[in-house]
Length: 67
Image (cartoon, rainbow, N blue to C red):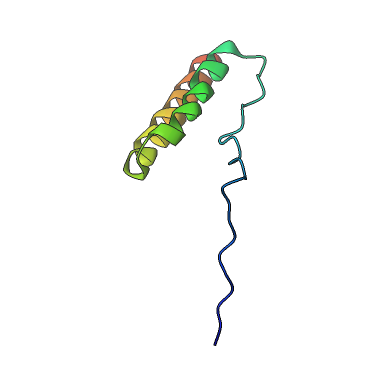
């Protein structure tokens, strides 16, 4: 059985990830969500902690606005 030759991806530019988030009307939310730009530099083992920090920040901001 012959396997296909792997494609040369040397000429393809990887996509920008994560995409730049659209700004919201809430500057504090924008600041919290901006932390997502750290994902490409983090090892996978650090993603959970980052997501948790973002979640907690958004929740705290939401609770502050509810008061």
